[in-house]
Image (cartoon, rainbow, N blue to C red; front, side, top):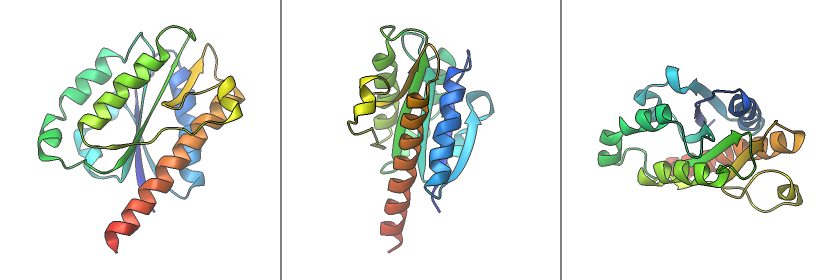
Length: 170
């Protein structure tokens, strides 16, 4: 069973609501979800899992608190200990045009800097109203479509982490 770290900052509650659906998706795929709000996360958490889903509210980019936390992972960046594991991103904000994709791209940059394998979402008709191929999103309120996109992202990360884990074992 793949262990997935679901780590996020949430200020207004939208990001946490998406995290609920991501966790459900991870568990539906048979994964073990290690869920941490950024205030409760440790760098050690990164070493004890097989994959990652990282989220931030959209403040025209990621929150300073989340960025500062990742700044203290430089030793892992230098050692390459996280490289090759799957990772995904999610965000929520109150405006569709307030920088949602910019926030996802900033999260994406943090993940690929560690050599992680970025997991996005393939195109579906649902994306006409929810989500992005860069990751799960919500605007203004978390809708059922947003929840489905978030759950799908959690399943994709857990499935890939399990596949990679099995291939390394043998």
